[in-house]
Length: 403
Image (cartoon, rainbow, N blue to C red; front, side, top):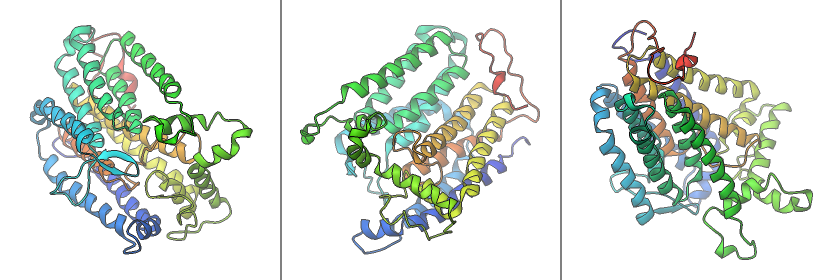
């Protein structure tokens, strides 16, 4: 990596996926657009996807020119602004598909989902927090307590929307940055144990009587989706209703075994998989292009994560390394969960396929996260930076190095 030059390989890889995702949306969203707009147009989602990409591209030129060291000093202020936006969602939400995740902003032609942008800024803030308090890495008051208070406030506000899918991304990735930042290993185990207990509590606390549909709790869909994996054959009819989308996704994926229908020729996109442009675009991707292209998509995600880890290896300050690990982890985690849902290996989570799915806020937040990483890549060294520093805890982060 050359000093003062952004990682153009990372930039090219991201835009390759973004453009490929735009092509896929042009294929899979025709029928959805036609029905969503009451037969008025068939390019509704494609036009907005292009708008999201153009806005993100404009932000690219602004962000990569910034000195990230100066920008991160304002991360606590920006973090509070996004926390206020989460509170605003609870007060002035816009409901789309029963979920109250969106805010309408007059100057934008579309609604935004603040939780997606919080995924970026909460880690920037945590990286800044850990960077500033690195000397107290094993201290409960100066290290663990600020971390847990911030995460509790953010996750609780997202919980109230409710948006469990965002929680599934933010919480595990925050553990990773906690681990990389030389945090107390016992504190990390405490976090993981608390999360497991939370999942068990959610599953048991949100049970409801199907006959009292109007009185169902906020997270009823989580209980149904997880429980569908445990129901017996006697409950197959109810199970099939809940897993309908996943069943149709599996059908689409295995269609490639008989023939590749090629672009724009998918059958499952015609409402067999409702609103396929969101969570289940991967299944139609395989149906139209075949399994080999599905492997290529996986390769691209690993390659983007590899570029992020290279920036981690060559970065000369702790904040840059924390952030590089987070971007790589989030992209891989989000891709793994989405593809696993399409393959019916995990319950439906509502998590999008990075850079491919139509989900404006998710796409823009991911691109902004990468642009910030590109800004960091300008300040990398020409040789790998040694990470074996004494006195910051017993965790050896050299295991993350690319050899």
